[in-house]
Amino acid sequence: MSHLIGFERPLAGNTMLRVHVIAGDRYALLVDTAMRGYEALVQEALDYVKQLEVPLAFIVNTHAHHDHIGLNRWVQQRTGARLAAHDAGRHWIEDADVNYREFVLGFPQLVADSPALRREVRETLGEPGKVDLGLRGGEHFYLGGVDVETLDVSGHMFGEIALVVQQEKTLVLGDALIGLDMPMFHGYVSASQFRKTLTIIRDLVLTGRIVRVVSAHLPPLEGQANILAAIDARVAHVDRIEAFLLDITAFAPRTLKDIWIMLSEAMGKEPEFRGLTMIANHLHELCDQGRMKLQNGVYQRVFDPT
Picture 1: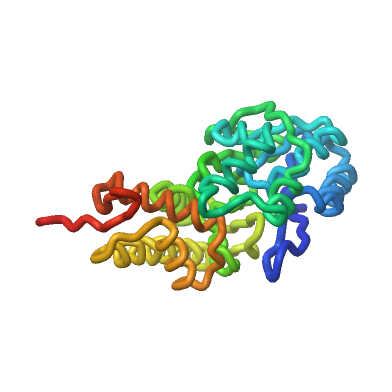
Picture 2 (picture 1 turned 90 degrees about the vertical axis):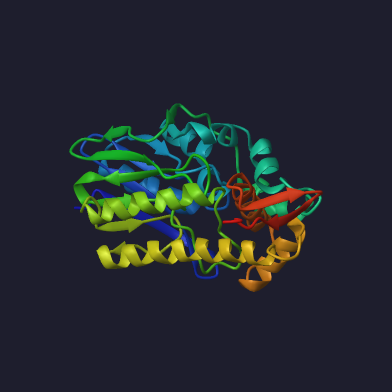
């Protein structure tokens, strides 16, 4: 019997929302808790654990976005499980108002608070849970015959955790392999860190440590060729975004709003808060690298004189 099983429901369009149970002989672990409105999904996972007749000892949040943490407290109250998450995401997990404000309203002059945004994010966060175990990557959960190792796979978000189920050579992700076919930018908060994470996953594949990848939204990936192809597609995605940012600021200064609208249109994405944050952070990195400058509220490419 597999030590790992996923439970899913439709989220939007062809995108699924999925949680995973990893179970050993002594304990079980729940990866993510979906969000308010998906109680039936999470209850299905809890019922499965009950059938195994082992306690649910841990919840592990892959990262602190609303569709991964919204039922933390709901599960804790029903199971007594201890909540583990990356230390960098603790403040979002334990304070829903901070989470909403920093995630959604980082640029209030461009994206204003609204009832629609509150329904989408704030209301789905549920009652915050308390983080019992802070993670950094490199920790192990020993569940009885099953060794689960944590990895820091930040990039999509600062402070994202992945889990390697050693006995199954399977990598369990939240959103470290971002969705490319969603109507909005699934995005990243750091292009450089995201590239590092893709390299980490590639190395896991090439060294034979993993042969399968499961995640919160993507279909499972089986075999080296399929996983590497998924990684390559995301590297190309970041490269395309970076090339566009440099090209459109090469000969004309652009405001953040201009760049956000132009890139969204060019890539067929809705201009909304996730993409805005991704673009602003990518521009900031390019400025730090000396490849772009921000002056008087506009960005312009800097050409290497050599």
